[in-house]
Image 1 (cartoon, helix red, strand yellow):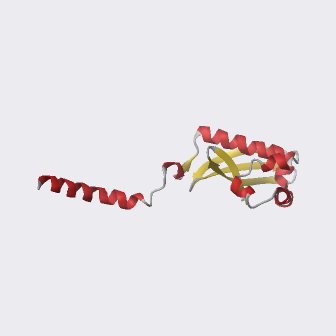
Image 2 (cartoon, rainbow, N blue to C red):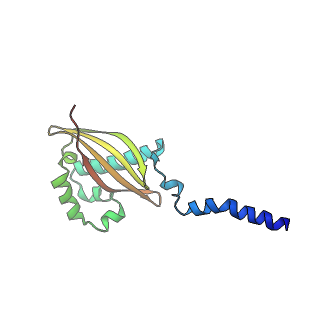
Length: 146
């Protein structure tokens, strides 16, 4: 009987852990700030794409997009999207990196662009699949003048 009590106690003790376990995110999916190494990798990946876009090297720039993005957007569509919506990348005078965080498994990197047309803040979203980064998208964040 004593063994059965121990098993019963163990099952009751583990019940809350297993009940919560299905909702818990894997460690690599946790919301957190990027590590120094991740920041460097993300900066390098985004910089390579920005430099290719600034040279109008669409084929090279497209290679830095995530496979999931390339599955739904052709090279020609990609070039048109950049030319129509992201001129600040093409004509930038400089750019710099600020906040980097991971949310729901997606890397979010803020990039500040400066050009004669003004200042822009973009939030780049990147996935990391099989240790390879890919740009999923970028969103222009409105700057608030104070």
